[in-house]
Length: 472
Image (tube, rainbow, N blue to C red; front, side, top):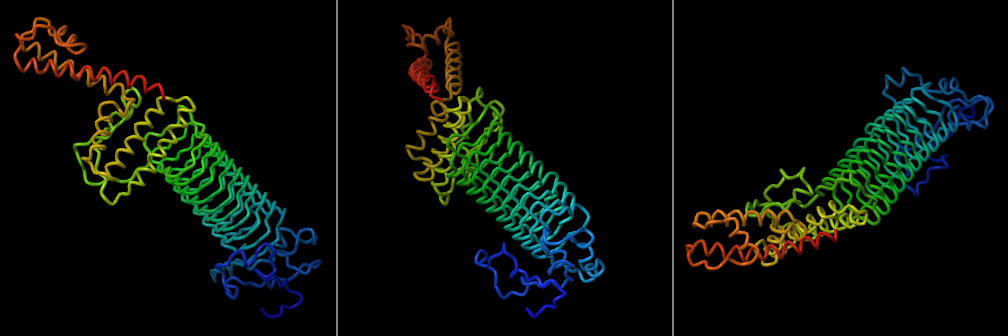
């Protein structure tokens, strides 16, 4: 840059900005003129900088009027579609509020800590690397603004318009984002620890590798959000909507997910230790690998009617995973169900634990189908277990099978001319066919033998299921 006359400010961006270091941003070209600006505004009477770059405690002339007068005329900005450069501006503690229209301005590296920007218009502004810690942005318009790597710790963002805002790498620790509207926002690698995000809309937001530890997300909408590798330890997720969210490798250590909705969420490799859940936590179905090639002979194994009556109409035909589906995908799904099952059990919600046990075993069965084939002995054994006993916890599956066997046998005996078919079927089912049986047709005697054998097997299985259910 050339020499700047003494009566002009001469502030150079980013050279004179103490908060910006090239070493922290290796992807920038130091010689890129697009990133270098020099301020040629007139200096204040009692400072060697202009109204925008003089520190508030070094001048008595920093006011809304001098800041407005030091700006490029509005007609020039409009005609030339100019993004006015206010890079490195020092406005710490200044009350700007809505007195100045700052939309589209360049505020890179600016010091706005403690600044009152209530209802200010910063739409489409470039505020990268700026310090806005403890600033008040209540009701401000930040739509389409770029806050990459900005410090927004302890900032107030209540009722703030954050549509399409970029908060990648931003620090928002202890920020107040109550009711914030952040659908599809970019928050990757941001620090939101201890932030207040109560009732915030973060649906579809990119929160990859974000720090949300100890954040208050009560009632927030995180549906379809990308939370891969996100730290949610000790956060409050009460009533949060996490449906269809990607929580791969997320950390939920000591997290409260009471009344949260987890339907369709991806929990592969997530840390789910010491979760706090309650009867309102919904985990009906996690995200699972997409199966292909319909195989109508195999039916989806849903929990029993007493455990999941609301989903009884969702007993859809299962499809066969193709050979390209990795068994590791089903393994990760099964582990997620297992971890959630453990946490529900530890919190005393045995019915939900049983539901998740069924889904865990179903995922393991599909894993076996991928590894060994649908008609392998191990897979067929698991299929029969799920079909008749709900993987050892489905008592109503067994009761239904026993009722069907008893009813069919009773009708058969009635057709065979037995005087009291109900009593005959009861004795045959529980013990053995009454003697003599020679008067019965051969087909009726065959039914009696099958009823005795299968009935005994089902009674033993029922005892096993009833005992096994107490483990959950």
